[in-house]
Image (cartoon, rainbow, N blue to C red; front, side, top):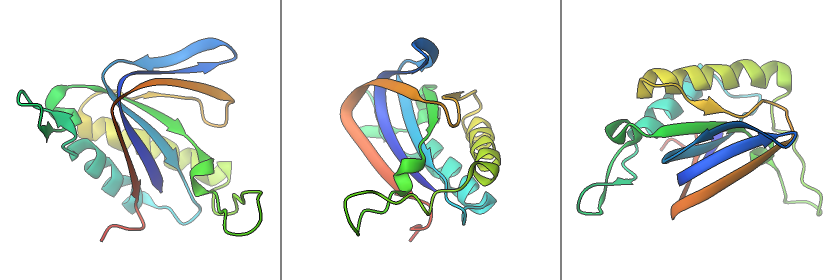
Length: 150
């Protein structure tokens, strides 16, 4: 699994020109799922994301996690995170999981995050044509690949 985390002041997802979900201060999490992903990847990422100290304390030092500040999370599926671009100019998405594999893992990932942060994540809609808007805070953007834990 690959995730791209963006610390945001606010973020939203529109589908067919209607707001589907939105958050205020928190994290926008783009998640790409591949066929080789498992519950181990999900659980490791949920713990890692919920405990990352990337929010400022009263001294403007990033010492606080999403759990510490009770902020929101918006999770958006994005298979293109597994794009392979080494050959030619057209990306290959061969590593991205097919929907029958990806949807259950995506739903488990959301549940695992909900359990870790003791709140409810907002989401996009798996497989939909979404327009994502955000105000990046910092900017602070972090990429985490569950296959590179060490």
